[in-house]
Image (cartoon, rainbow, N blue to C red; front, side, top):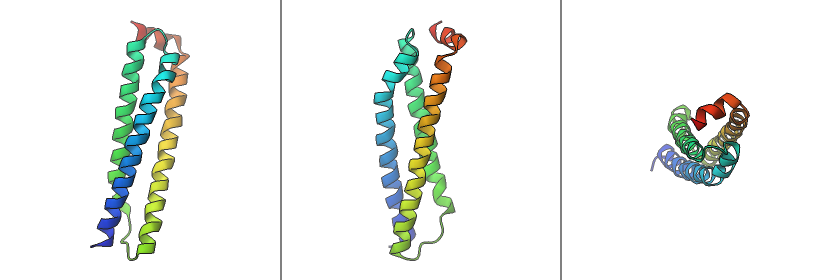
Length: 121
């Protein structure tokens, strides 16, 4: 079997699993934070949580598919493992950056009175 195709398949399986599992955990546990930040509007908090999950999946799965395009031709099993770990590490760092970015903006928006009024009406 072609080493590139094997590497692509392994990469997509591992990172797809990580993306889905981490996204679901963010969704399940993040609702408590969002409900606390947007107390007056429970329905709005649930809607924001669902939108964050969908956006998270779209960004990450899109990046997974696009990132394969720039990979070099893989010649050996050692190179295959190196690239798998490198690319998976990049995805994990991207997930962390997106997570903390979302936390920052949720906190920032929760402190704005006009945004809270928008959500409660």
